[in-house]
Image 1 (spheres, rainbow, N blue to C red):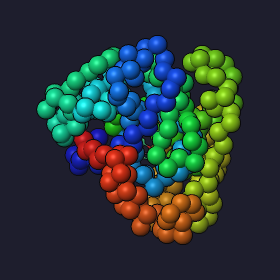
Image 2: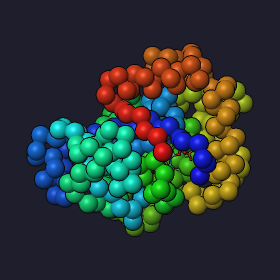
Image 3: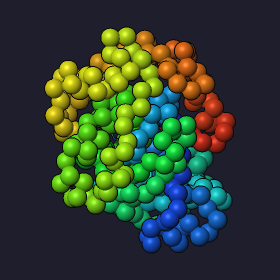
Image 4: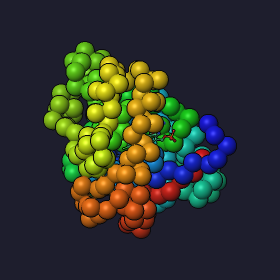
Length: 255
Ligand code: A2H
């Protein structure tokens, strides 16, 4: 980790009914429940296909104010409390402890996503000491997301191991949202194929894939969809970030 603070956009992915027995007590109290994902790419939210959680990871449901309950790691909840996002100033208010396995299969409604309902799915390489421990998946533009979704689609045994139903994964195709010259409109897939990456566990190759796509996407990418279609990614990014904050669909977070 660098010494510079990293600023993330935290995307509020609303948990939809029917609620699991574990989450039911929270949902009854007139509260809105969100899985909260940390992203550096708010302009890619059109292309979300699912959320990622770490099956063995520890998460909690934290009261942020009178209405909103955020599901994320304790570490993120404490950082948020110091950034004025907690019902109790500078302290966390945990209503319920959860594991990633408790979250797999939750139906979610996420801001701007063309897929109106997406599901929480397992990713094995999530770090619990970065962001919120929850990631939103954009397989068109994120090599990690592309490979993790590819693994789940290609391996029925992997789905079975984590209790993932076919209908949470198989209907979700890559949504083209950004064009990058020479990389096309599914840049993550192209780079993973070019580098012959076989699974989400090939960390070094995935780091190379991210390096190749990340800078080019920012400097040369053009939006293909949404209100800012035709604009450069670097123009659209701050506009969409501000829109999310102003409409209460996201908050800023630094660590
Ligand atoms: B990004 P950095 Cl489209 N563990 O969002 C693993 N990965 C995590 C994480 C965690 N705890 N928290 C956040 N991330 C991911 C979108 C995206 C992202 C696209 C393209 C590239 C990209 C959709 N997923 O990241 O180490 C999140 O995925 C490429 C680096 O702080 C977040 O942004 O630089 C990014 O990693 C933050 O990584």
